[in-house]
Amino acid sequence: MLLDSVAIHGRVPAAVFNRLAILIVDGNRHMRTLVRGILRAFGARTIHEANDGDEALKIMAETAIDLLITEYTLERMDGLHLVHHLRTATDSPKPHVAVILLTGHTEKPVVVAAREVGINEFLAKPISPEALYARLVRMIFEPRPFLAAPHYFGPDRRRFHPNARPYRGVDRRKMAPPEMKAHPLIPKDELLSLLES
Image (cartoon, rainbow, N blue to C red; front, side, top):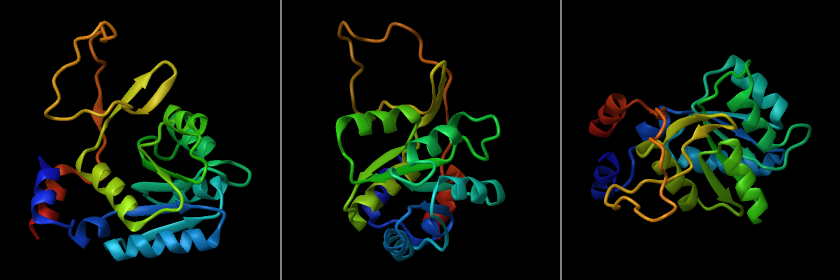
């Protein structure tokens, strides 16, 4: 497993983060600067910024973005509406984009709503470099497959652990799992090449 290689050899090479095109969406310029600084320290160099959801959609329509880091509370179009639009709109510039939602609102309804619109990761403010790094590493090395269901499109909300035994209880799913395909931030062969360099 790729994540085991990272765990054994330590930090992810800067070249991996340098490969990503990232968009930070936050109405607070200081927060955007903080997140940008953390990402640059990891090795990211292609970083775009937007003040709100409308501006983010314009940037994404014109620029290839691999990762969206968005605040929950935004002017005009909040983070949840932005992600919902990206996941479900017929004119979405990138429905499979990886998303981290940042927020100081960690109440259960907010977390559930974020999960329901299709975020990949949730990060509570105040953020730390370690917490952001952990989510990025998980998204890069353990991409979750996307699920298309009648009322949901986004990454599979279940987390699978390689050593876990199958659940056999009464609430076990009885249907065959739908066809799902992972949409990694970096294709596996390219990621292996970056790790070897």
